[in-house]
Image (cartoon, rainbow, N blue to C red; front, side, top):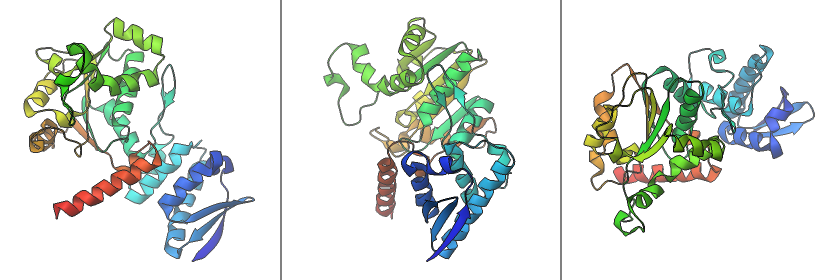
Length: 316
């Protein structure tokens, strides 16, 4: 074990509230970090210390060039370093902010940043990865940003109504009341990003439409931002139907978690089939997320890793 003292860059950003940011960096760098006066004490194995020093050197270069780095930028920089990305770090900073009526949203990882850029630059984007990685939330933020900037005239939010062990028919109420629980995650993201009264008005006017996937059949959606959530539970026929709904000046974002397919025959998932046959079409972007992109409770990241490990063993 070794220990070195590294001159501080910006104490307030490194430590964060109650050293939360420092703890996150410790876990990823594999070293212990402590604040001592104007220095950061790095304690660990020589190889890990050297890796941490290279990382902090990169951060110093960015700050010396005048970049005003936010907390999330430190983790995006670490993503870049770990992936050996050949592009200059400057291409990725500062992380792009989406300023909405209720809050400002910024990507928390390199994959999230690439996802936002893909949605901006491609008409069809697949966001694929585990729960909690921001697939739906960032797609919703981008949809609202596009609507706010008059790049689209409406937002269509849809998902298949597939039971995860429960039976839809036993739920109380009429069809709309039975379907609403399946659409709740879309409502949650929407109401977290804009004021509830504003969201209510947009839904009432039909500018934002939230509907089951079955309601999309036969429609052509021009100047729309379409989000298909939980696409792993679509059939091949449903996926084809949705992909052919897009009209002029429209965006389509499809989110899916391949590890949570609730169909009776998981191999017949529409998104699994679509990825196979559409990969290679240059006008379509495929963005892949992993456990490092999880932005929920830190325990969620560990749970995802545990399940991945168990599934890998059962597949052998």
